[in-house]
Length: 280
Image (tube, rainbow, N blue to C red; front, side):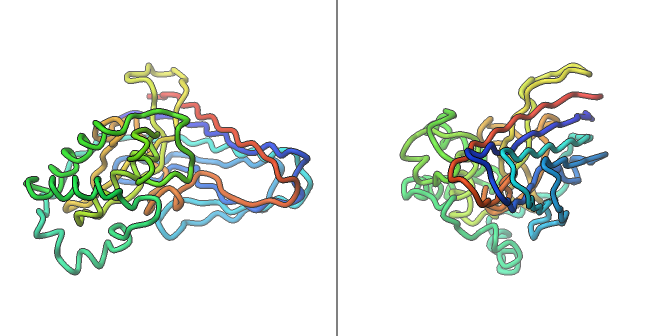
């Protein structure tokens, strides 16, 4: 077990200032089978009216409004989380099990294509080919992600927040969000319920207790094969004690850390930083 303190700072600087802003933050880790949130707080500057709630997907969200002129909006989420290594507890359902009508109905939202994840025709054909030979859905996940990463490299700055999976395939490059979308669309295409996971990852492989390091907002996937199982397609690995879950959704749009609108000047600049300190 490892324990981390996470400080996620983000916000906007407005050219000419903003008069009012209406926002929603998803920056608080969730408690799940593999992690326990010991404490969390969200500090907003300027002081805002807030409405904490649990969204449709089970993610902790805070809607907030600022009704005064401001040149900058700053949001700081501070959390302490215990992370546990967990093992698989259920056997694979197999392809026949995933084809069950009741199961497909239960997980229909994680089988439905969205614009973000809809696969390129070449990706769809690749997924179909792997499906024919993979013994289990889990085998297909490992084989498919390996093939996708042979084609798509991790390169920051070549895509935008609204880049589609089909475009990522054509570019041959993207970041963790893009690689997660690409993987999700391919797996849904062959009938594997798959969801987008938003969270944080420690950049150091073996940080010392007390060490503060630069963390990263990160994205990976969970797929259903008897139970929800995590896989990090960017790093080609199972999420470990260095991954912290914040929320789940169909794609990035369901779990974006900070979204909103404002009145005022047309220009704004977003900033983000994540610090992670190992406590135990």
